[in-house]
Image (cartoon, rainbow, N blue to C red; front, top):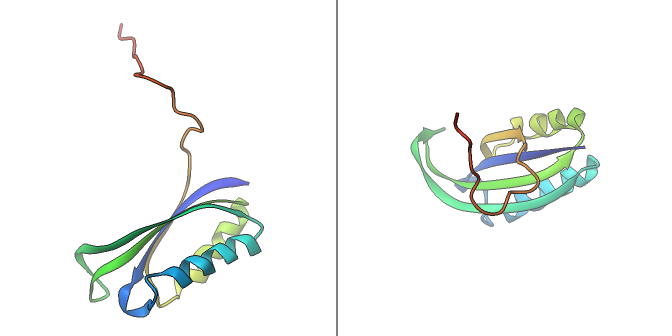
Length: 109
């Protein structure tokens, strides 16, 4: 399995509970696809720089999960036509597992 990060922007008018139901639904989808949800970060309501589908703000959510690469397309297809989702992005999470302690020195020659 590979690590992924997904960011969703939800339509404020289509979500009654500040996205709690969407977050739970996404966790269940990952589990049903055989993956593991590592973290869910609700980033709150934010104003857009420009309107998206005549909306001026949206609810942002960030998910970190592990899933087989062949099943990521199923997530994209499921939320492609979902009325609650204004935008979504799923990318491979390629952050290093450990971060070195202290400053990193670069040798210039």
